[in-house]
Length: 106
Image 1 (cartoon, rainbow, N blue to C red):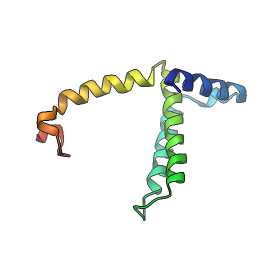
Image 2 (image 1 turned 135 degrees about the vertical axis):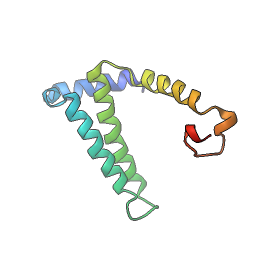
Image 3 (image 1 turned 60 degrees about the vertical axis):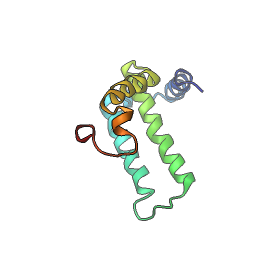
Image 4 (image 1 turned 180 degrees about the vertical axis):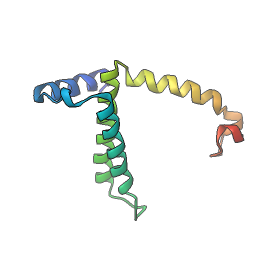
């Protein structure tokens, strides 16, 4: 499913329930943070987390992220590709390959 299809399905889902009134950018950003914390809990005490739980929490993070992008009028795929170009410039393959060093330490 493309990001535009996903956003349309989410928009329809929230419209049917009249939840858009709760989806201010601020509330969506808070929700992303909360759900990210729940995703982190999956590995808090054990590296071998339940894949089904990780999947469910990741879906929540992505859902709120897509809702925020939609609220802001942005295409998630475009956001990712634009950011990837910036990151690619910071981390050229010849310097960054095989290292986790920050760009200013390469």
